[in-house]
Amino acid sequence: MKKTLLLLAVSIPFFNITIAQVKWGIGGGIHSNSVIEKNNLNSWDQQFKENYSPLSGFHGGIFAEINLDKNGNWAVQPALLYTNKGRKFSKSYDSTTSFLNDTSTINASWKISYAELPVNLVYRVPLTSKLRFVVGGGPRISYHLNSKAIYEIRNASGEYSSFDNKLATGDAVNKYQKLVWGVNALAGLDFNDRVMLTANYSRDMSGFYTAEYGGSFRHELWGAGAVIWFTRSATAKQKAAEKDSDGDGVPDKLDKCPGEMGTAATNGCPDRDGDNIPDTEDSCPDIPGPVQFKGCPAPDGDKDGIPDHEDKCPEVAGLAQYGGCPAPDTDNDGIPDDRDLCPETAGIAKYNGCPVPDTDGDGIDDENDKCPLKPGRKENGGCPMVTTNMLEEITNAARSILFDVSSDNIKTSSYPALNKLAKILELESDINLEIEGHTDNTGSVRLNQVLSGRRALAIKTYLVNKGIAPERLKASGFGSERPIADNNTEAGRAKNRRVEFKVKY
Image 1 (cartoon, rainbow, N blue to C red):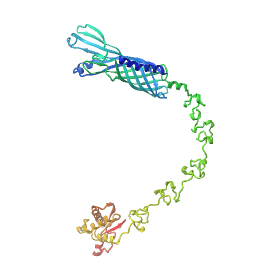
Image 2 (cartoon, one colour):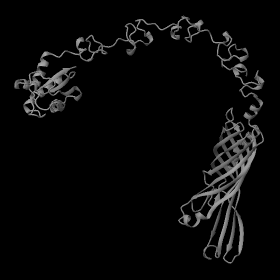
Image 3 (cartoon, helix red, strand yellow):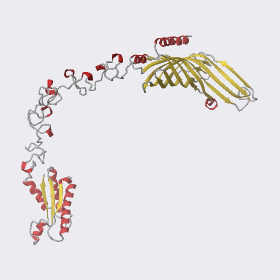
Image 4 (cartoon, one colour):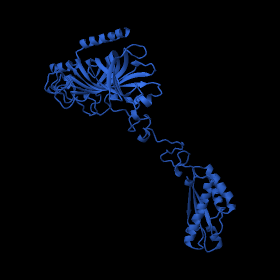
């Protein structure tokens, strides 16, 4: 009794809505209903589950719709429907004593009728001016009206019999619930706010039957339906009342130019330049302008985008932040103060208006300083002068380097000198070293050239192995091209067989 009163309490607001709202209709459709049964019977999956099949049915009733937004896209759609549900069972038996003595086949169906109250939240997506895609879903309450089970039995001898039983309702075992709740969903098309065709799905969230062996029983429904709306929605009525012949968004009753597309600001009349002045009153209909100049742009003599009546420098292009005047340039370096990081000291654009930096403070800016991180002298390109002591140490090291005869193999006696040279290069990281190999004129010119180059390269390799960066070292072989003594004497040839080092920053 309590559940019956609950259904009536829910239904009364539905009828009030149906009567009060301007949009309502009738609809119905067909569906296929199956029962989702879950239990712990050992023989269920092997002997019975596959013998159950869906039951076809129909649903129909009255529909209402309440718009939730002014465009009629969102709406609440309740309905009061008659729906029949259930399932079928069919099984054949091999033994005449397996079921009901001599039964060979049994066909059964359970048909349950409900009064249902689904309430869907729907959303319509416009596809054309008269066609919209509809999708929605929501809760549902089902009230059990009546039900019966129909049996058809055929025995082994061919005899046929049938009977039906009314199904009991209630909360006890082997009875059907009076109230069942679930969820539903729909998707389809709405034609001109008059006909709605949908595909439907619903499923119980509570069980509709209590079996003596436990388990759960829930309806699942797939179907299709149609709704014919007897009245259009309030939104549709409003659109019909607000006829807009030219489609400019201004209703004809407010449109001063109902046959031409316009804007609301111009009372529906055309405004090509969008300055809110109708073309018929605009002296420059294709160029935006203020009312005070009859729709034409304000004069701007210097073309800086600031009209003359607002420009403090109307004959010189400037910036709005300076009232139409150019930005000041205090240091006269051609870079205005608003972009000059050193507005009181002349500089260049590359450094945002600041002078070229002099990182090492030697009076030579970094752009002209070959050694910008080390103070130096102008005559040496901004690099320090190589000290006399350093030159002497490097020269002495060169004189101490000896090779095996006709070989680029450095004698071990030369290692101390090379190690000292590597230490100098390590301490003076800004200097580079050119290594030159020379020979006398004894032997082939080509072989002397190759040998001198290999000896210079051997020294470079030694220094690199001591940790000196290879890009700081340059190895060259000159053979006998640059003698410093007479090659006609043994003493002169000995002087010509040498290694020279040249230091550069």
